[in-house]
Image (tube, rainbow, N blue to C red; front, side, top):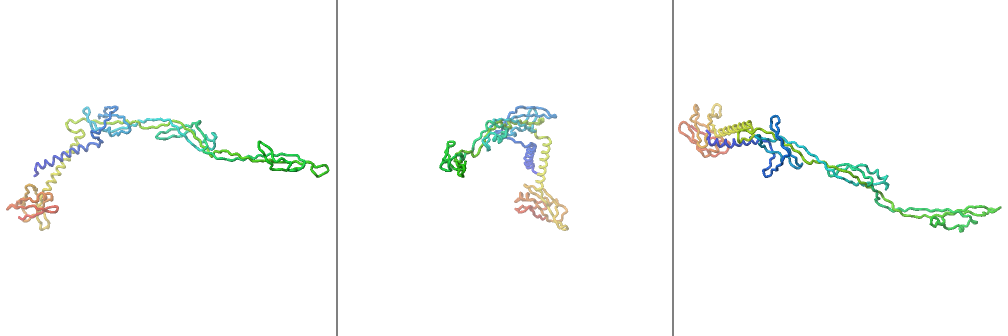
Length: 381
């Protein structure tokens, strides 16, 4: 039989471990801060109601979006004779809108310096989006300005021409003036043509000549011409940014009556406790069975007909006082028995003397060191 002290030494820690593990398994996984690190938030409202006969406690908090809502979740707590456990958490974002006056200057290429040619380059409205602010800006027509992007020098030519006629007695070029004054310029003679005016009576000799003189001269002036134009305009308006200013959290706890038994964790139900006790009993029985099984020695005899060894006895062997009773084996003519000890038992019996009762003179066997799974020895009767 098992030693009572040894059985108590096995049962006590196993039962305690099972009870604590069962209690811990029934609780939900929670985020729990250390006592020194825990942050407390005061609810803006607390409400106690009963829903379908179940006491329900709700706590409402208003926090900034940066706060971790897990910090609001409390471990089970007692209140007015009830044990409250976390059920759920509801969240509601509170939006805020911030406005900002905005101006944007827009620059475009212009076809000319005329406002009529430029104004079509600017739409009446312009979308704005920057740093989370969005809106629609309006064109300030009075702010439109056109400027040249650069200048180049252009030379212009100005031709001046004057035609004069002279009535001369002779078609002599020297009689025609070499230059004339016009528009403040001295124009040189550049072309001359002659025509007869009238002949002398009864003669082919011209009586006078008409001289048509052309005077011309080209002058040059330089001027600055714009290479291109750029137009700028200002858009004005208001932009808005919508964000989450705060978050409303509603934490709900459901209550159950605190058990009458003092010291019993309310999170452990009767069924859960029964299951834990049942598991503990099964584990204890399993350990006792295995302990006894390890201490069983098997006694074999050789069967000539079947040519195998038959088990004729199984005996419990104590470690402190190992003993085998072969005298009780009746009806076997064999005088040689094979005893096999399981490895764990044999390891504990190394160096010990096993007393063997044979019904006659007692025998002894000292267990020697061995290598292998089991230990075997023969007994001659």
